[in-house]
Image (tube, helix red, strand yellow):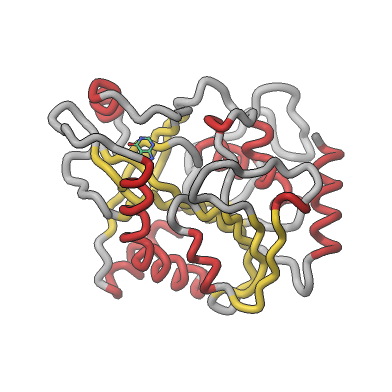
Length: 271
Ligand code: HPA
């Protein structure tokens, strides 16, 4: 794994024009339009990057976008690798390892999620304050490479509190409605049964999705500072009869996109 990370990072260091970014952004469902805000961009398809898996899901294109966002150098991932696609945890989290090897020390992640918190509405933007790893494994299982991080990393502040405060103050200034919550990461690809949504709510989760947790575990292992956003694209629970679909999720994510873009843009400008 170490050799592959080095090979991919060397390739990108060579390919990337100009200064290397310090900020990485994983653009989740319907948030790919962040790339439209990136100036002077260089687009590198995943298919050209050695050791990178290929993204297969509809609505996710697979490109690295490197350029300037709000005056800062950023590396954006347009499309991510999901566990439900069949990738293993090492593949799902490989890009985060490569980001770290390139010198990226801050990671923004976004995703679409189903809401279980009874105060949430479709279209809400949720700042992730914490997560529950409900995947059947942990991306750090196996031999620990001390050069990548410690064997038993703390996950006490997996989502940086200062960045959460920054998001809150920007939202207050801009009049953006934000909610806070705990994200539970599951394999998918099924959406949850009503009983599962209910069980996850009772466990302490506010939203559920099929990504993010593996990448955030690895980013924390690597000592990166993390900020996460979920767009609530559907609601689940015992009293909710609406049937979630991939199309509905994409549509709701698109509706919330301008809000998320303006928040992320301002956060990048100030962080
Ligand atoms: N469950 C799991 N993943 C999701 C959902 C959901 O309801 N909505 C968007 N991603």
